[in-house]
Image (tube, rainbow, N blue to C red; front, side):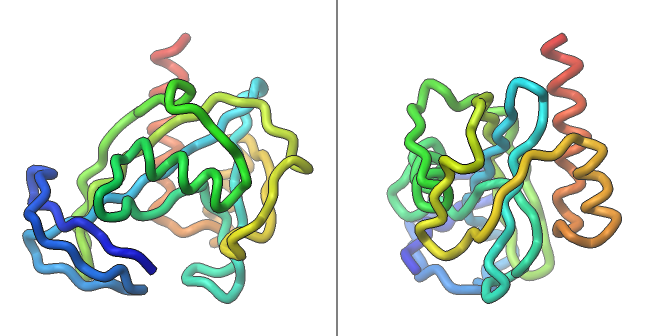
Amino acid sequence: MGKLDVYNENKEKTGKIVERKVNQKFADNEYYLYVQCWIINRKGEILLTQRNSKKLHGGYWEPTGGCVLAGETSDDAVIRELKEELGLSINKENLKHIKTLKQNRKERNCFREIYLLEKNIKLNDIKYSDGEVVDAKFVTLQEMEKLLKENKMVSWLEFFIKEYKKYIEKEN
């Protein structure tokens, strides 16, 4: 499963390292670091992947992401996750850091680093090698909203629609 660095509320490493576990519990003032990479093609469609039904949130659609392991940078974690989950080799220069979200939740707190990768990817070039992802598809924002309403994505991903609309407005 790997190990995670523990951070304080200012996103500073505390020096504490914990074993990564499903439903990891942290103290109120402890955080972990998580990355998400939103892959957008030339048409403005978003690449979503479907989680293996045997995993936490199995069957749900989501962007590529995962925990930043102890000693890793956020950039390193995004590159690793894209390789592990989709078989994609990406250069750091192609990633755009969009935002850091501080999320305080009942069971665990995290800093979520949001990245954007603007790249045309052919779905048949994706390789599901780690068993975590079983399918992928490109969707429009409207299709993504529909997946949320149909409870086919975890509800906390709703934030992305707002963030992506802001990003599009800023770029235009």
